[in-house]
Length: 217
Image 1 (cartoon, rainbow, N blue to C red):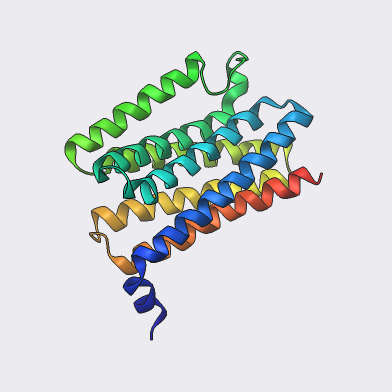
Image 2: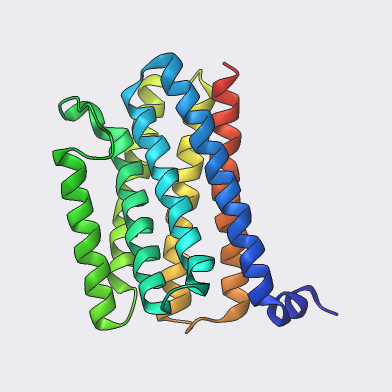
C-alpha cells in the first residue's frame, strides 16, 4: 500500500498522534526555555516560551478538545491560539522596543495582541474561512524572518541558536504560504495537507533542537 494512501485512510487516528507529538514538543520547548529564562532573566525568552505555550494550546484545542466541545468552538480556539503564538513569537524579537513588563502573559502590549487575535478569529468565524489567519501569519513570519536575519547578521554569526531561529522563521513562512495555497487554490488537497503536516513537525523540531543546543551553551 502506498504511504500516502495509508495516511489518508487512517488520517483521523494519525491526526491525534500528530497533535500529541506537537503538544509534547511544545511542552519540552516551554520547559527548557523557562529554565533558560530563570538562569539568564532574558526577557525575550519569556515571550518565546509563551509562544510555544500558545501553540500547544492551539493543537490541543483543534485535535483533542474538539472531541468534547462543538467543532466550531474548537476551530475558533485553535485559530485564536495559533494567531497569538505567531504574534508573541514576533514580539519576542522586538520586545526591547517596549518597556519591561512584570507579566509576560498579561500586560498592555500583550492585551493588544489578544485583541487583534480575537478580531481575526471572530472575523474568520463570521466569513467561515481562514483568510484573515493566513494573511496575518504570512505578514507576521515575513516580518519575523527579516528581523531574525538582521539580528543574526548583527549579533549571532558566531552563535548557533540565531541560525536555527532564522531557519525556523523562514520555514514557518513557507509553511504558512503553502497552507494558504492548499486551502485557497487547491481546496484542501489531502496529499498537500499531509506534506504540510510534515513541514509543521519539522518547524517545531527545529525550535526544540535549537533550544536544547542553547540550553547546553
